[in-house]
Structures are given as structure tokens and as C-alpha cells.
Image (cartoon, rainbow, N blue to C red; front, top):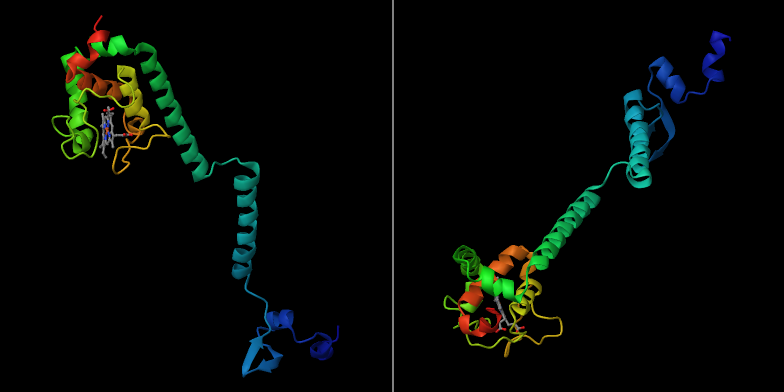
Length: 210
Ligand code: HEC
């Protein structure tokens, strides 16, 4: 190559500028703005292509291969796990629980009744009152001898655990319903509350005493 001819042979573009350490400006100009004609520095290109490669690897690992679990999947799995444990606990408790057991064993055990009372005093008391007679009419009275959803201990357990039935119109005149407390309390805790309620209504559950 003839060195004298070099500028003519090689167009004065990006590679030329880099080689010569010169700044070349492209011929166009818009609104007084001109454009450099240079190769981007390697560190910049590295981050640019690196980001593309990272995206591809991330997309493959997370969304295609599923090798690493997303946070949503982890949370869903943890919730499913808790729900299964609760379901198992409910089944285990229900397997040993019936009307007679609740009345004869649970409601006659002062420790169980005290535990039930303790939970009652933290949440239920707000609507059903300290004497269970619902003075503010925010819930039904639990000492009036009337059991709207069945007068067997297991009916009461079910109501507290699952809340008002789906087709219930709730309590007049507001239509207020019972929350499914099974979402908050374990089956054992609900049985303790039933024992407490039974202990306050000895006459209502006489028939299950033997
Ligand atoms: C926010 C108010 C509220 C709270 C708190 C509440 N309840 Fe109720 N409860 C109600 C309402 C309203 C009803 C009537 C539901 C219906 O008619 O469908 C009811 C009904 C009941 C009944 C049926 C009573 C009957 O006469 O048939 C029982 C048993 C009961 N609740 C127990 C509990 C227990 C135990 C707790 C605490 C874990 C509790 N409730 C907390 C509002 C409440």
C-alpha cells in the first residue's frame, strides 16, 4: 500500500478515526447538531452485549427451563404447604371430635375452657360481649338458648370454623355474618372456644352428657 495514497483509499470513517486518534465528524448537520463518526469504546460495547447475553441467560433459566423458582412460585408453594398442614390438622382434630367428646371431655376440662375463654376475650368479645349476650347486637347472643345454625356442639364448631353458610342472609337488620375463623385459628383453638361456649350453656347440651 502506498502511504501517500492512504487518506484517499481508506474512507475517513470510524475505523480510520480510531486508528489515527483523530476525531472525524460526519458530513451532515441538523439544527446545528453534528455527529461524531467513531467506534464505540470497548467497555461500552462489553456492557451492551453483556446485558443482551445476561438477558438471554436469565430468560432461559427463569422462564424457559424453570431451574430457579420465581418469588411468586416460592410464595405459592409456601401457602399451599401451610394450607395442607391446616387441612391435615383439621382432619386430625375432627377425627377425634364429636358432640359427646366436646361436651364430656373438652367442656369439662377447666384448662381447655380457660384457653377457649382466653381466645374469646381477645376477639369474639367485641361482637358477642363479655357475658356472651351480645349487648351491642353486633353478633348473636350465645346464651339465649337459640342456635341459629344447629344446636349440636359440632354445628357450632362448624359455624365458627367456616363462618356463616354461603346462602345465609346474616343477622337482621344489617345482614352481618360470621367470619370463617378457621382462617385465623387452629381446629384445636376453635374446639377450645366451643368448650368455653358449652360451659356457659350447661342446660343446652345436657343431652350429650352421656
Ligand atoms: C365482627 C363481629 C363478630 C365477631 C368478632 C365474632 N362474631 Fe360470632 N357472630 C357474629 C354475627 C354477625 C353472627 C350471626 C351470623 C349469622 O346470622 O349468619 C355470629 C354468630 C355466631 C355464633 C352462632 C350463634 C347462634 O346463636 O347460633 C357463634 C357460636 C359465634 N358467632 C361464635 C363466635 C366466636 C367463637 C367468635 C370468636 C372467634 C366470634 N363469634 C366472633 C359476629 C361476630
